[in-house]
Image (cartoon, rainbow, N blue to C red):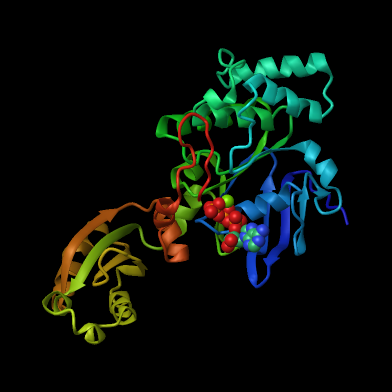
Length: 358
Ligand SMILES: Nc1ncnc2c1ncn2[C@@H]1O[C@H](COP(=O)(O)OP(=O)(O)OP(=O)(O)O)[C@@H](O)[C@H]1O
Ligand SMILES: [Mg+2]
């Protein structure tokens, strides 16, 4: 069955990838419009790489279907591969070759004629700012330089869709911004559709028109960054950290503490409270961190302070903020993506030496 949907660069229906009992991709369905940037945002183990591996024809789905440019990826992976570029999560450029040689080897794979190949390589090296270093070994490149080279390699055959798996992981803030600018420029100049995975909120916010928040292999929610922020309840968020006074006086009475569900239900009794979610804290178990979505902003703070006092809680911190993508993530998954971020080990150690341990 072919799917003729030229406006959709990528289309996924009920996609599943099963590893034993684990659903790495669990009935995902979505469409990516041509010429847009689509972000799949999720923590470690959410299924981001598995999804990209299916869409780029590296692994077969257990069930469901995926089309790239209207072509069934399971049936015609070779054809699909001509239309797509892939920048994988781990660095895969050859350290023992120069930047130019890395690009040339890849271009030969696509049977590009020599003159065309040379011209494209010169053009790309210029675009990624590596003309001066083109004939140095990649082993001497920084992580950011190597990442830029990998992006150029993914574009060598002028694909119309570029898949990037965590394109800026492990890069310093300045190199990350350089990669973002590069992707925005390439997208415009080469009429690219970009499909990227990330666990960086700012990256998804800056680059993507559509963001799918994924967790445990499922698309939890899909919308524009603005839509995601707007659709979480309440106009403002109160971030509060509280501790029950009994807990402060004695750590032996844990079972007597008011249950968190009871606290949530009590808070929900206020007309200005639209929703309450709990952030998991690892540092001290007696601390409770809540996000309270309210409609009346700063006016709710004294009311809540009083109420927590009455219920026997000491308020450690309380603050008001506008919704961010991080709040959206907590709202839909009940956990912070940053906690997962911290577990990720930087895999750029020294000049261009890849050691992925994440
Ligand atoms: N070949 C495999 N065999 C068994 N389990 C696998 C395999 N590949 C992935 N998984 C599991 O599938 C789940 C999703 O993995 P995946 O690599 O897609 O996550 P991810 O979102 O890319 O995570 P990360 O942010 O760490 O890169 C994980 O629980 C992982 O352990
Ligand atoms: Mg991954």
